[in-house]
Length: 74
Image (cartoon, rainbow, N blue to C red):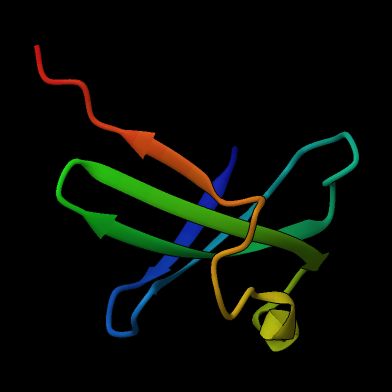
């Protein structure tokens, strides 16, 4: 089961995804930043060894690898 931790008290938000059961991310944490702006969500992640003590892997700014998601209203 994939788990997450979110801190909305900082800007951009801090997000961690962990609990990858297998594959290249098994035992790893995806340290990310998140920005919500209207109908757009931007996320950027860097993998690192599991555990909050390793959050130095978290990006400090959005990069050319940033994923932008746009909300579709139906």
